[in-house]
Length: 116
Image (cartoon, rainbow, N blue to C red; front, side, top):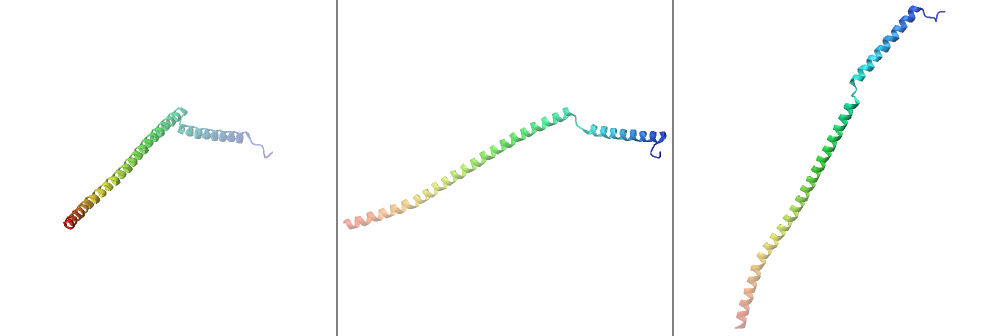
């Protein structure tokens, strides 16, 4: 009966198993101490959701403001283009009118000389 354990060996084996089970229990307890409770997790999740929603709203406001700025800038560019076009036409007319007046004066002078 070499496979049979003596009472002393059984006692030592049982004590070793008890110590291993106690060590495992302490390891589990130390891990559980690090785990967040359900209530705390729920509060953190709710806060995170609220913060994400607030950031989303802020981002949307910024996008709207950016779109408004882009529209205003495009309107400014159109207005500036129209102003430049009006100025160009005004300069053109300021140049053409004196030339036409000069030609008209010359034509009247020539007609006056020819009519005599």
